[in-house]
Image (cartoon, rainbow, N blue to C red; front, top):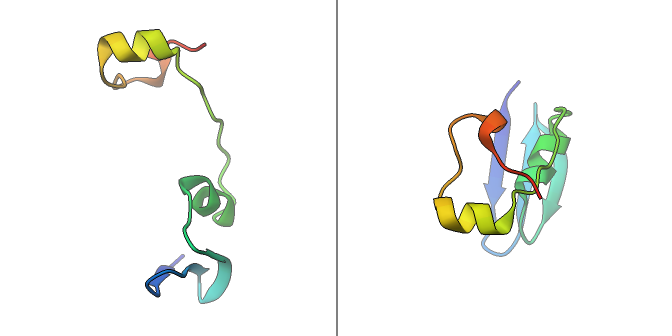
Length: 66
């Protein structure tokens, strides 16, 4: 699989194997994951915990969720 990210100043596009999958003024990481047909899950960490710790842990198992 080959990816091309085309950056035309205020317009961008993502091509996967030469085929346009997403385009717009910006691309979110979720746009890219979906264009690649990857399975993913969005987690929402506890805001107070994250503020206190100041960073995300190395292991997903250590993330404190809401």
